[in-house]
Image 1 (cartoon, one colour):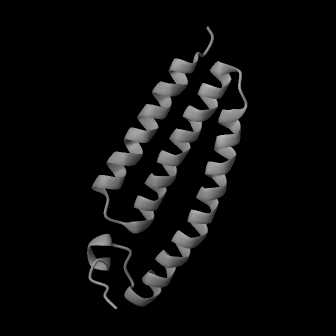
Image 2 (image 1 turned 90 degrees about the vertical axis):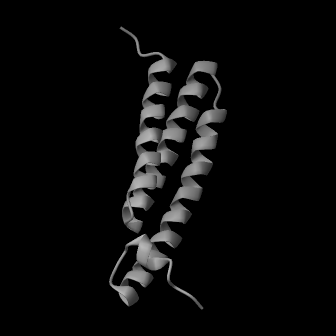
Length: 101
């Protein structure tokens, strides 16, 4: 039995769905951040599967750029979350919307 691109697309769809549901339901900033990363990895899986199916390296090149942007996002996002956690002692998004000035 061979694994076709349809299996990869289905897995990417499920992973993206889990990430989007987690992003909408959870209120913790760190968990929301991990859900965004899960969604990015689902898109990366789609790029790789499409590139494999089309015998083209463009999908892998796109994944490289998405990973670079995701790494920069992790650095900046975690720094902001840690800075807010140090001052407020919470990572709840409901309480963070009250920040002003």
